[in-house]
Image 1 (cartoon, helix red, strand yellow):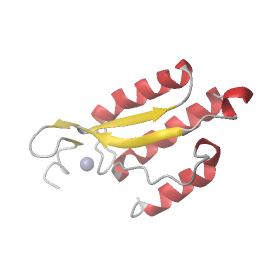
Image 2 (cartoon, rainbow, N blue to C red):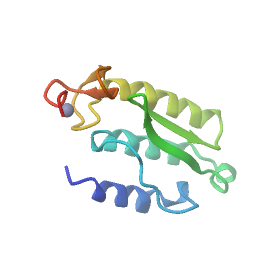
Image 3 (cartoon, helix red, strand yellow):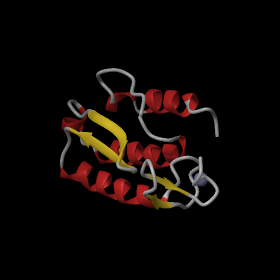
Image 4 (tube, rainbow, N blue to C red):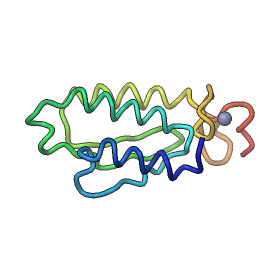
Amino acid sequence: MDNGKGWRRRMNQEFGDQFPHGAFHFAVGNGWSLLIAEVFRRVDAALDDEERTFFAWNDVKEKWGLLRMTHNGSDRIDDIVDWAEAASERICDHCGLSGRLRKSGLWRVRCHACAGI
Ligand SMILES: [Zn+2]
């Protein structure tokens, strides 16, 4: 895993048409990089020609320890987002291994090894 700049750059390049207003930072831990990459892949496959002309992400962030993704797309995109937000509850946002939501201090999904980080 890199320092977090590499995957962000790759996401913005590979799925640039989902970020028509400019590059995104993605305010999430590096452990979720594969999860949100899968979201962008599924969205890319779900967009039809018409929706692709206007689709944009509004926000991709962590809130109360879980992934939150907002967009201007259709119910089909909502289904993908619902899946990803639920999946984020079981993926360590630091390293990407299996984790659980820990509610001590800042709420974070962490594996056992990353719990104190
Ligand atoms: Zn971890």
